[in-house]
Image 1 (tube, one colour):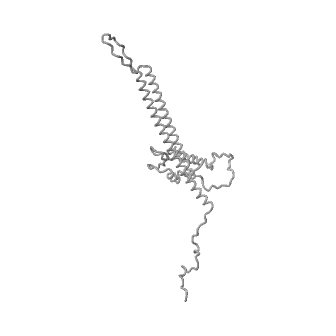
Image 2 (spheres, helix red, strand yellow; image 1 turned 180 degrees about the horizontal axis):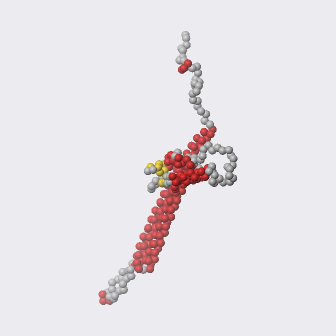
Image 3 (cartoon, helix red, strand yellow; image 1 turned 60 degrees about the vertical axis):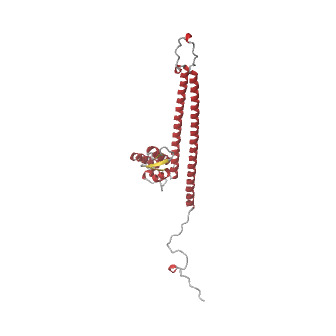
Length: 261
């Protein structure tokens, strides 16, 4: 009995080898693997740091609120008790009525607010109010400093993640936070945002978009730098005025960038 004939391979081919010129799977290099692992680790570390900072901030805020509430309650209770006691002591005692036949003219009673003890008490109260106001001012200044430090630290980390490091990152931070004020907090919130016109974007998304603009290119490190290695003519190793000095060129571009912007 004859064996059944199988279907012939397409296009008359005799094997499973791909045709010539077809795309073949590319080999993944060790360098590519290290880059992928590094990016994954950076993302995980940044996420864990953000969560840790948020938990610490919430914990500190709760502790400060409970402390301030307890201090104000204690201060109010103590002040009310002290005032009641002092005023009660200053209140003139009621004298028993004398027989009408022996009535004599009584001297006018002095007012409690005119007594030295009452005046001393009011002076203490003024001092307490002044100290309380100073404490509140210091607390507000400390909170503003904490928010500013947290803002700059967060933005600097994101700049580093996106390839802007060192002095370039410091300059970019100054432009974003101080000069252009593109980065800041949402009103009545601890959320850091990137301000794009009337729109407020999450800081990570906003910085990624900004780094792609022409304004951000001066802060990115130069690519494909090539040279002969010869010392530039004109002596001096500082090169502060050398037009080929990368930092000098960056400074000139930054000044122009701030003038135009």
